[in-house]
Length: 157
Image (cartoon, rainbow, N blue to C red):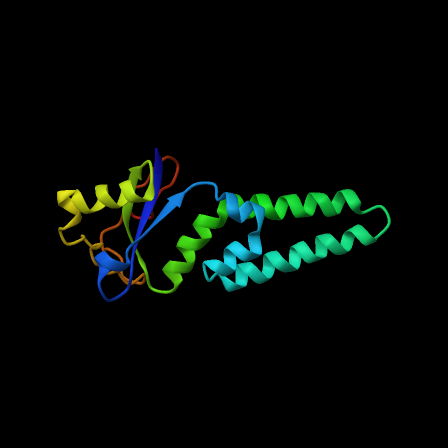
C-alpha cells in the first residue's frame, strides 16, 4: 500500500478538485524530468532540469568528460524521480492549496474512496491554535533567583 497526500484547493468545490498525490518514486519523472515537471506546471523545476540535462549533453563533446556527463544525467533523473511528488506538493502549497491529510491505499481511486467514506473526512478540519502572546524580553520577574553550584548573589547571606 502507498501513502497519498490529500491536497485541497484554496477556494471552490473542495470535493471536486481535491488531488491525491502518491508519496513515492515517480517513474515518468525519472525517465523524462523536464516533461514531467512541465506537465505538472512546475516551470522552474522544468527549466532547471532541462538546463542540467543540456549541460550533461554538452559535456559529452569535451574530451574525457563522457563519464561525468552520464553521471550528471543519471543524478538529475534520480533526483527528479525521488523528489518529484514532494516538489509537486510544494508547488501546490505555494499556490495556496492546503494539505488536508494522508491516506494509505493501493491506488488513487481507492485513496479517494477511503478519504470520502471516512466519517471524519466530512467534519471541518481543525486549525492550529493561535500562538501565545510573547513576553517582552525586557520584562523580568522582580524576585531574585536561587544560586546554583558556586554561583552566589550579593546580599543573599
